[in-house]
Image 1 (spheres, each protein chain N blue to C red):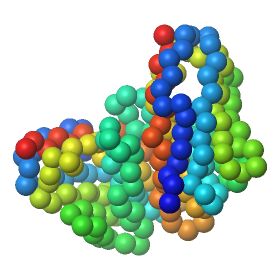
Image 2: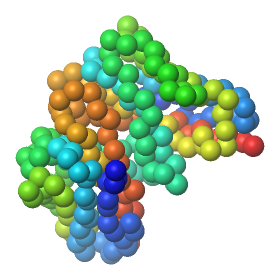
Image 3: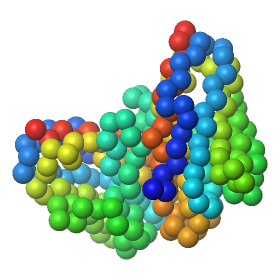
Length: 112
Length: 115
């Protein structure tokens, strides 16, 4: 399967703590994208990191990409209850017509 | 900017019945995707259009599922006849183009329950 794999499957933390989620994949990519899904806002794009980039930031989000290890991580700093959601990595594989292959997701619960 | 629109939001049907979902992408977006998302899993691509042409339908169960994108704008996805295992959320997404690096914009989805 070309599916990315997120780790851990579930994560529960207290408000204010940091949350780290990891994604591993199997073949060369054009880019890797992180999405968030909750019942209120559906599936929303967070960050896109290209294969020649190593780190990107967006507000409280930090994404790293290690193409040698075929892995990426998403760090959410100073978490809030509103960050409670499922987080998915999606990989755009080279020569794949921009088809995204999705992982199973990490379920994050931020407790007030 | 208006987002991706989908209807209906919810649908309950009996097995062997037919159902259709509608999607209107963000204006000007050339690429349109239909996904199936089963509870607890990530989205699975069913079909991808570039304008009104099919780019990828390798995971579409063509014996029961069909999709079209007439005039390269809105799209419909049909299931006929439905099976119990088709119960899922059907997501429509769009992006500006296949060229370059673009994220996908998702609609709210249609939750289908087959009884």
